[in-house]
Length: 172
Image (tube, rainbow, N blue to C red; front, side):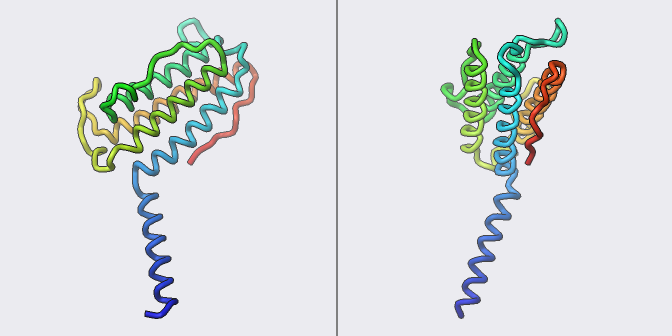
């Protein structure tokens, strides 16, 4: 085999390996999760600290409560359905400052990522008992992102109501 053929085989294997990693649902999720974190933290940074207790109506959560609700849901879903370790389940801490709130939120994103990195891809096919009926772990993974997206959309409205321009979208 000549050197050009060997080089083509090696390059082909690299391309196949990279394509397989991109096609991996967990790998794609983790890449999206990191971008979701970046975008969420940019939104949290955009709101001035004096507006962290703002809520559009009496029946809604404050900006800070929304952020902590997102954090709690990440802890619950990742800790309950993807981990058996009590130490990975996060703690409900009510922050007092913007900086503390952002740090806690960032840590929750990182903890969720760390938990999910350990989950074998085959486990996403497993069915778990969920309050809305039995779901696959892949469905729980999708819910994890959908919940963040849902509340992040509300937070963008909070920014707009205070005439604060939201950060540009960070997607895939």
